[in-house]
Amino acid sequence: MRTLLIVDDSAAFRRQIRTLLTGEGFDVVGEAATGATALVACRELRPHVILLDIGLPDVDGFDLADQLMHETTGDPEERVVVLTSSREATTYRARLQRTAATGFIPKDELSGQAIDALLAARSA
Image 1 (cartoon, one colour):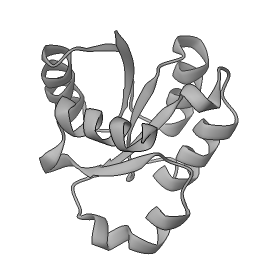
Image 2 (cartoon, helix red, strand yellow):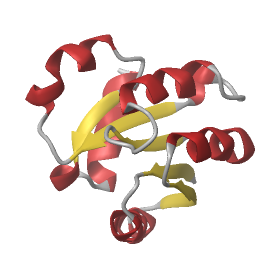
Image 3 (tube, one colour):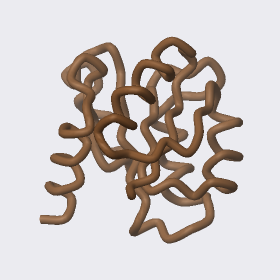
């Protein structure tokens, strides 16, 4: 089963996406509301997929994505960081091209199928 950590400052969004992704075959092993708690959770839980909101209260999501890909324990080749936002990708175009994150999915398009498609594209 694919393990996943949800990092978003909105408790309502975390609940909603947990329900959706659990129903679509993901094992949601944890949640974090800040960048600091996300780093701790990643080190302890070692999720395969990290769903990361770009707009966190304590850190820029792009900076955190780079940290998560390079500083947490586990095999970085096995780690997937999926950035998400209520804004469209065009808002972040230049930063998305430079990030260490695996990809981006707008919140209104987020689903297990969208994550799977991103994972498949990464493997191809």
